[in-house]
Length: 304
Image (cartoon, rainbow, N blue to C red; front, side, top):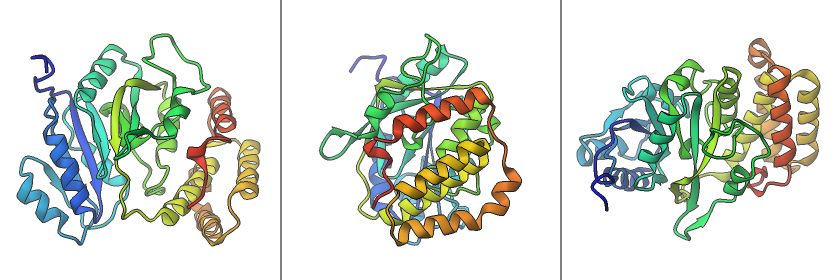
């Protein structure tokens, strides 16, 4: 390792949200502690009942631990970012971790590009060491952007694989509390772009992900589909929103999980319509382009 690589880098804070995954979180914190950048770490414990908070206090006293007392979902990240004092924030799940050197490189990329709000890394699935299927979608993004971007421009991002400009995150309002968790990034990404920010993929950044065995894939599918519908109704103009809704109704599995997702989405219509604010035509064109490109993506199937 070079002397430069071994130096602490104080530009990025890592934010982790967790709920009842003590063993996995402790593994992630150990790996983050070993990073050459030595980033400050903030953990929001979303009301775990498995002793997570006590274990973090005991084994990782250098970590700032937030215990809001309830499961805030993705909004637990907002709580942590309010306490971030570095210019950049790297999100990380309790079952993922950043590769040594990637946080330094991400900070360099953001330092050099003041209109870039977020940079998303390549995701490697562990223990197999294979690329996540979503990486191909990021690498082959159909969007166009300025030449100064470090890689393909993106229309959204994956929170657990992204370093963001903390000020841009706060300026766009962070993650919307109504969505809670599950595809919550799309709304924030759209609002960032609406403010003139760019998002990009960077091939030379890497995050490792060992999917938790405690994950409820059916519950995540329900939340993801519900939030896709809510995002569609919040930000898409009327005709594209109707077409997108109809497409989802025709293509998602016809099962109890899908029915629950649509029922939950319909129940939220009053607040969604109150907050509805469709994007301008230029941004809608980008959303339509992405929607068409994702139709055959193996990473975008509402199954499980």
